[in-house]
Length: 214
Image 1 (cartoon, rainbow, N blue to C red):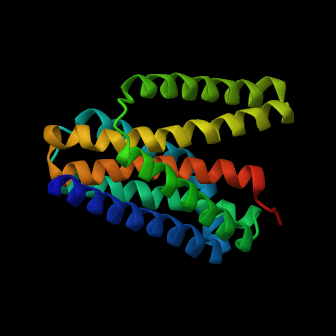
Image 2: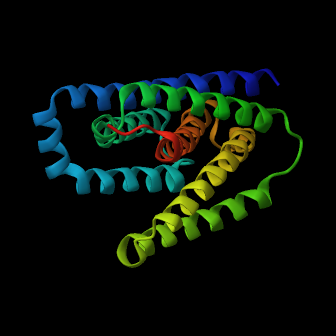
């Protein structure tokens, strides 16, 4: 039990570091608008490719890579995400971003605590979440290319909030299952990476729903 609690402490430490890097990078780049515009124009597609490559590499190679490699990839991912986040500071008011961040943190904290204490096996729940997420991605692409429906976009966004709320609970429990397989150090960083993705995606969707635009 002690090692599990120790891992969760490290998970949330790494999660805090990742969020700090992302929002710090985004806001810092926003303050230099010329650099932000140039970076987003020239690097947006490469950044998306890098993020996807890191996510896939971590997911499929986590058992074989060294702990230091896991940490480097995680930090690199949070930096690249921060670059794309600079656009949010252009679209939304800073006070609104801070409020939604705090709202996300509260929701995330409650769900994470439930995921930590629950005794229910959520393995099958994870499959449902993944299938639903794939449906959201496909529906979002179709809506962007063909339908251009604001009502459909709203529905997709709300469904996305529910899905990533579910992922927070699922990924919290999954950390316990990963620990014996990949060890404490990698479980802490990879667990933080998964919860980081949950937090960021939940934050973005709540911002779309409740954020105040400039």
